[in-house]
Length: 198
Image (cartoon, rainbow, N blue to C red; front, side):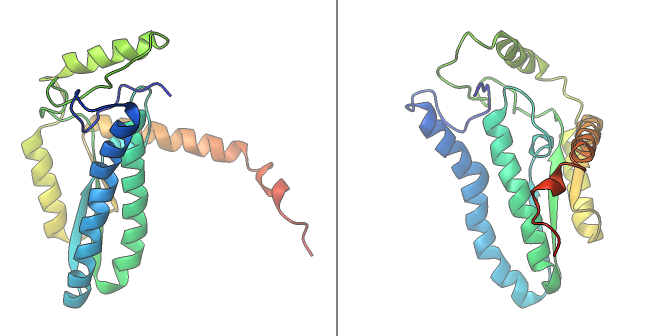
């Protein structure tokens, strides 16, 4: 699978298998460990608010970011299930899905790319360079983004997913439309695998 994904490793670490494990340790396992510790406290106090910062790439996937998307997709599933599990205890869960924010995420010292690449995906190599050049001109204002997250928690209510940025909204809308078309295209074929009605 082609990927120019952000990886939580240093270039000196060996092999893509280690890169995958390191990324998932940060994006999924680390969050899981915190979430195992928090609910007992929140259940006891009968309330609280869990905020998991995902990405718009946890809702939709783009070429070249397979590993990053895999981690964020896992975080989204974990968070969505958790929201249903803790709701009866007065605990709220918010999944934050930011678009491109003007942070240091796309700087070369922050965005660790795979040590080995292949020449078979030149468009992905070009996309990676375009992302590096995007640094400093992203649409999202981090101060406004943080304010929106805090405001959502203080309000104590709102949708499960909090989209941040007009770009995130555009990506999400396109994903919903594509998913709806996919579902409708299988409306007749999906029931074909059911047992016959008694």
